[in-house]
Image (cartoon, rainbow, N blue to C red; front, top):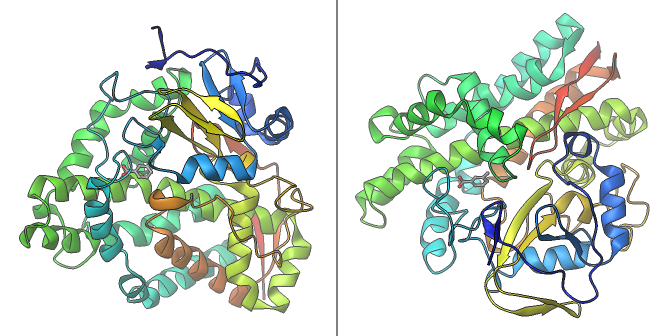
Length: 407
Ligand code: OVV
């Protein structure tokens, strides 16, 4: 049995086309729409020889594989590496990279820490931070929206909500880029991100210790579970690490992509201004249309069948959430950004037991910024070319030059 990228090599299953493509080519990662369309065209699955994986990009099969935790496990890693065969670069996440029954214990604690009530309690803080930032950007007029807004806002509210006293913006953002790039193959992107490890990883580990967290905040709720004997002190630290792994790059990307959508489709911004009650469904459409986390893997833990295709134990399946979110079979006119669509069942926050546990918080952050914009901004203009930043698992902007027209 051969290994490719740390997982078992497989033969293409009967009925599955072989597709000679590199889904991790930086050109594809930066502008993935044609690759998404071609993947959907191939059928429910395509076999990609370069990595000896199956890829799926139609909505129904992607949803089936992604949410069936019993057949398609996360404990063997959600990137290309199979943790049952190789040791991962960091101790596995105690919530992302585990299965039930253990998963239920840790997930429950994060659900508690990030509950709608805990999030709602932060609403005033989030709103005043958003108002201050948007006032400053209206004053400025022209700005670089990735750095000045998409990164600046989550960094101004999220680390504080976890309980950190001295957030280091660069390290927090670069750790997110590491964690997501690590899910891909051993390519240039992954190697460059990992090179920051010796500086960032010990710092992250230190930040997650109880002594470094405020007595209020999500971190404190997690450590309170250790006091109750639900988890150990060490497990609590690892769950705080999960907040830092998954809570920064994702919201930075979601916010940047929201801005990009409204700058690119001004008619949709006009529609939102005319009816601000569309704000919630509008963000769901941003998630569907841009899919910040573009792909995650699962590993078949037994021989099984999906849509008549036989999949053998040990197969890595690349679930291309970005492709699934653009499936015409599910969303007619999928290539249109339409804030009145109400795209139920999109995979922008995942699906099943591992779906985004921080989604209330992410929505609250974006809502606060968009409310401030609706109050203070009359027009959003793209003043240059938006550039996307390749990452093995995240589809994020690198540059977004914007001008705000104040009211
Ligand atoms: C990249 C990512 C997503 C979700 C959770 C985690 C990481 C984690 O470390 O728990």
